[in-house]
Length: 119
Image (cartoon, rainbow, N blue to C red):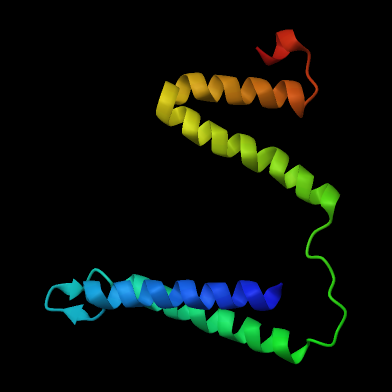
């Protein structure tokens, strides 16, 4: 899995570098051009992914272990997915209403507070 992820990030970094070059990744008379910082961030991302890919090929014989277990991953998703819905809700119903719903649901669901306390 490390090899696939590293290869995808190398491709993604290369695409970003190409776009940065089209924008201009040099230093203009008034400072850095629009693609200057994205180019170098993409370069670092691609280089780090290349190192990861090399290490994955080198350590191919070692037994592969999971990065995260199912239980902790469910806990992360139980916070991440509602947060993503909260961000979408801010766009649709506004920050105050979305924040009220988000906090009330978290108090009730994860905090196990009584319904009257969470509202």
